[in-house]
Length: 106
Image 1 (cartoon, one colour):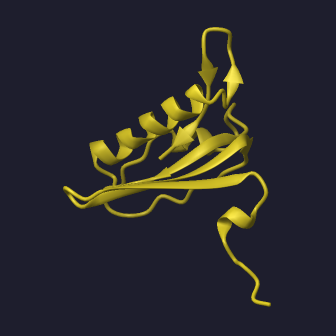
Image 2 (tube, rainbow, N blue to C red):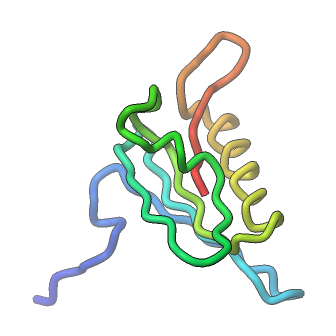
């Protein structure tokens, strides 16, 4: 029997993807509903990131609820807003009374 080697084989990890065929462009998101420790390695001459500085182990944030993989343009980075909205709609993150605080790095 062949063993599956998918990221979704890891308990608690979900993956979603959307392709906009008008462009063509798309984005993928890795979701950890309970949160997960994450790290980042940013490379390139003109990288675009969102909230990746929070992943520094000396900072307050201990886990992320999603990592968005998209183009580094303003539109690609803003895709993380959609991920954060989805997380909040599904009650994922820290309940701060007026809403859900979650972290979706891109």
